[in-house]
Length: 241
Image (cartoon, rainbow, N blue to C red; front, side, top):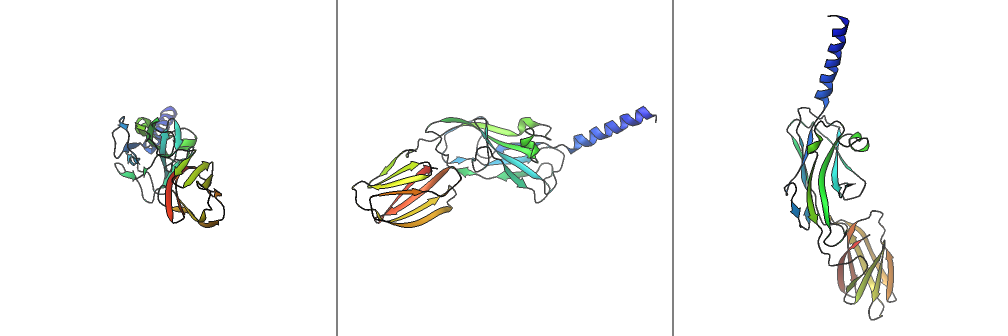
């Protein structure tokens, strides 16, 4: 073998190894067909990631995924600009799959608003979404699956919620409680839950006047369920903070 043939052999060997080291991940909705028009609430955002290629992705590698909604990236918790990563505890062989379960209520983005929603798997390593989408994936056409979703008509507004004798108004991260009859609120119990039902705030206050301002101590924006017990009655509403 002459020198030129040897160099060609090395180049071909390198290309062969590089090609074999690439993978092909795909994303598929679990409950919906691609391109369908959905008005479901709650929305079944579950999807399946499949290793379509011949390359085994080794354990301890991280697969990154999430949603693209109206061209913006979201993680599974619907935090804009973020991505969700899963560290593999065992190799993901060719043909194997990972099921991402995620059923949720839509945030208050606008009653009846029509949005484009895609479930997406970016790939392995942060370069798959920070450097260039789907880096290392030799078929990027199946990395996301999309549909059109219509947001529900909300029974509560962002600005004001009136519930019989107690009024709840949301000003950014604060709520205002006021008695319509101007009587003292008395003992007030406030509890705030996230959409998974986890209690993030629980407090009891004795209020001697008819108005109470209370700041919700959460730094994560999103939809929350606020439950207020006052004068022996309980009122519950969904509010965005």
